[in-house]
Image 1 (tube, one colour):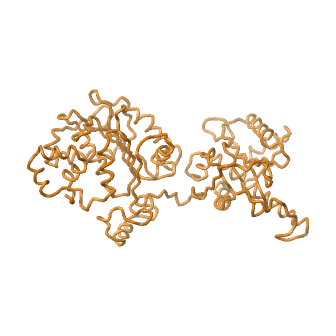
Image 2: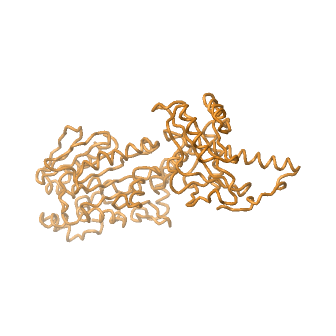
Image 3: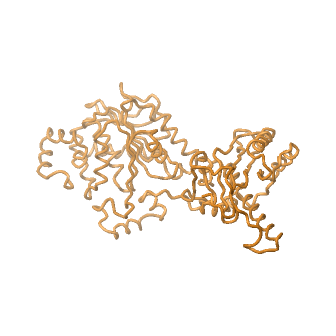
Length: 498
């Protein structure tokens, strides 16, 4: 019994039903190590005891668990805990377990049913039970003695109005409801999030407990959103991460991995280093073709402002949409304050970039307003992409008295964004702490996000700004007949805006 239960007590529990039910009803730790002893092949780790403690100490507290592959999290939380929650002191009546696919739901059902059919003591203490189908297309195990039910369904199935007798779900467990593919796009991540908030949680009641088990697959995945909401006080619950190795490279399960050689052997079994980092170390690893990485992003908390001595002007990049139809892209405008020159150049992206579906006349009106209200000076520059249809807009703006520079894009979109990477990573470009979340998401998720309008406007802005900066330096040196390091010296060349 893995040293958790003394041998003398084990013998008493085997012989006396009252003894074992009294002990196991009160303690999930004892319940698991008695009825599920055949799963316990290594000494139970401290992090596993902690998970068990969180499971048994409350009937209501939401729990969010990320743990490395092979940690036993699904065995403890999805296979064993629902049965104890019914049999034990928590007295749950209706547990619903969600998986991503019907195949996964079927496998979880088989795992639970196998225990109830083949574990003689568990069957004797919990039975009788029966398997049933229902109108939701899911399958259930019904425990008549306890008036309880466990239903397992996939995220593809609707569970509105789900009830067991008079009981709405009072325990909801979501086990790996996302994968790498489903988190690739914002649309896929939103779908899972709104499914949880709009369908799953409302199916419960005020006494319902929510438990989510999974992995950290994306900066904006379901568990990461919940983690942020807990930090901000928008959601209550406990969020725990258990990587195989902690920050000091200490192994969380020394009973299974006794030394570094054991860990290296485990690593060799994994398909790739990305899988090892993601599934065992719980590090969010982007795809191989990612252009901009989230850790490159530099933030500012306060804008230096137009009064700053190094302020040069306000620039904006415009990516135009051809249509205002729902399926079409949006017109995006990303603006920035420009400070300093040469090695002191800083580009402060302004919060709340524009991203709207507009027809041609509305685009003209929008940019006229932007130029008039935000960029009235001669030193302010409006850069508008000039390709095919878009060529008409700079011409129309000129007719309307709005100065705008038509910019021919440099190569395809990925190349244009790649050209900004050095400036992003070095901190030449800074983003506001709040107000550019969607823009940053498009930049970091370029290639997998459904829309990239703001990322395109951003690339246009930065590349045009850099070209203007380079041309300005070249013109100054040519005018004075100097080389690099010679020519006009601006006071702003020596002012650091941070």
